[in-house]
Image 1 (tube, helix red, strand yellow):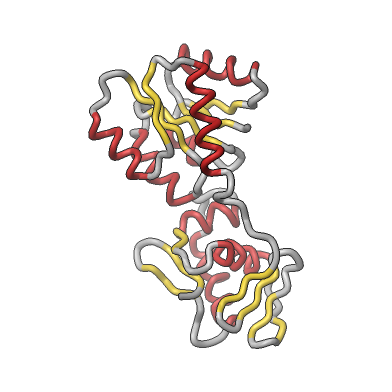
Image 2 (image 1 turned 30 degrees about the vertical axis):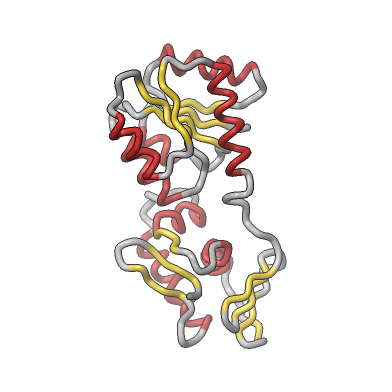
Length: 220
């Protein structure tokens, strides 16, 4: 299990990193929320402290949930207001644990979270059908009404992200993050150009729907 630990307390962070490493779980440890948003992609699970020096843990969680479905276990200090814990769960945290952390309980909670979420976020292999558009995620073959459509590498990657969640809303940040590897690099205008070309190639009426202020959806 690859773990991203987001904790600014060096005593707590060092102890968790050492214990998880000894149990065979590679840990990447960052102390700032901004670093968590840039380095979450390789993690199977995120351990997120709510009290961070640059961004609140709740804000990190909110932004992270627009980027990925990676399981998040929130670490909260004793005395944290119940309202903040509830808000964290509503923002998409999978579980929470009070500090000081008991290591055996932490490991048990991590394993339980992964068991519950192990089928989430895994890209389906094979064929996705949206109206008259067929997308083969293995061979990268795309057809519209039976006719093959030639897409560039970037166009296909954008389409593949949307196809894996066909019918569901995908944030603009998540598309940028999954295709370019960083939701915050200056590729916004480039992305718009690729998306416009992809939309034209898929024909009319467009199966790509814009969700104002959030992102996009493929299909109904």
